[in-house]
Image (tube, rainbow, N blue to C red; front, side, top):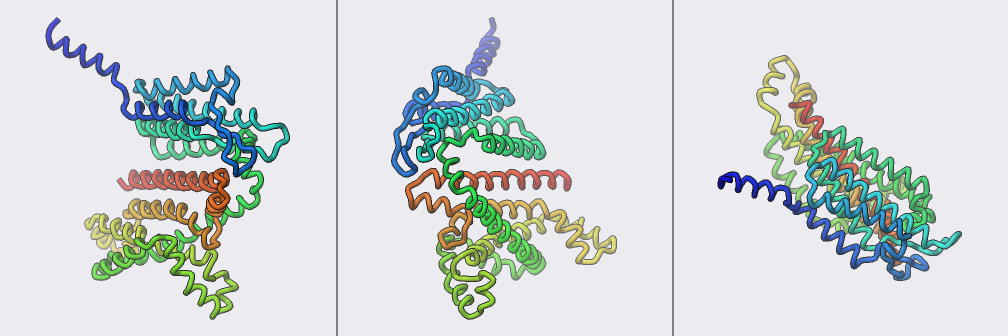
Length: 397
């Protein structure tokens, strides 16, 4: 056998035994979590520390074996399998196995009719879900799905999770126990969270888009406007809420109509104003950037066709700049969904109310009741707007 052939064999053998680096990290983290962290924590009530239980302790032998087998297959795929479809399928199977194992643990450890006991997912559960989620994300990225497929996959995932929750699969887990107690309030706070996030975004878009166009058309104004908005962006959220409380409180005291409209020193008003101010910079800056990227030839051609300046702006420049502008809107929406959480500290409401109430009561399950929907909303908004930007970029191209 020639030297070249020997080198080819060595290279071929190396490619067959090569371990995926990301897979190795995820498998190591997941294995360590299963060995050293509890899978669930049994609590006699919502605030006591609780008794840690491993996967083997909370499931019958066949259930523990089945879950472990699926996790082992996912681990092998993460380490050595290169086919993205197989990787995604096993990652999703692992996520389902871990979720159902936690649900089964809740059913097994909760006495019939008991409303006090709490079965909380433990460290191993959360580490495994994060590792499997990253594994699934990596597999999805390798598949390079189009924007429509990504949105459909998100919708299917949310629908499946909604069906499982409505069916009662996870009713005995602590987070769902907290939801059962706070169901009416949860719906109210979720609506308030969305109103604050989307309302401040809408107000910022109404002001920020014309301001961005003005900065583009009058370059001398641009440094002053963007510098001012940058300064606002550097103020911590809780500090800006506090700064706004005094003038809004004085306005409510001086103008009774403002007080009747809900404009007060505490509540939703300072939260909306603060979120509005934070939202201006990404929208204004991206509007300027998008308009600067519009081809000068396209603008001149539009003028040559007899279009007015207003028609050129609305039918050519803003249309071509729309993907960049929407990227700014995406930043604002994800930012606002997260920052509304802090508004609960000044009586603004929203899902952050559960987060801070849970922190005050040392009730991690109540914290998760607010935190999980916030993360889900932010992720869904980011993925949906990313897909929309990609579609518009393709149409423009």
